[in-house]
Every structure is written in structure tokens, then in C-alpha cells.
Image (spheres, rainbow, N blue to C red):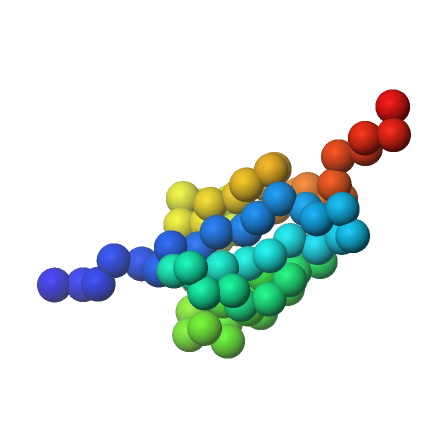
Length: 75
């Protein structure tokens, strides 16, 4: 029986920039672009060629993999 895939969560963009990346609740780091997410997951043991940033295995909070700046609240 295969183990379930790790739960990957990318938090919303922080006001200071970047998005916190967690795997099974453990913070891997703060990503500033999609390549950072891939690198964190590679270091955690994932095959970079198998990572689908748009797939169901990554939970994106506050916008998907194309959102890297916090919402503009100056209005």
C-alpha cells in the first residue's frame, strides 16, 4: 500500500513579500517565486520533474502559483 502524498500548503503572500511553504505542517521556507516552491519540495524528497504546481497535491491559499504579491490595500 502506497503512503498518501505529503500535504503541501503555500500560504498567502505576506505584506513583506514571499509565501510560506509547509509540508505536513513543517515550514520548509519562504518562496518568492514558483521555482522556490519546486526547490523546497525537491529538498524534501520530491522529484522535481513530477511536481505540478497547478495540480491537486498543492494547496494554494490566497491565490495560485501565479500570485506572488500581497493584495494592494492602499485604496
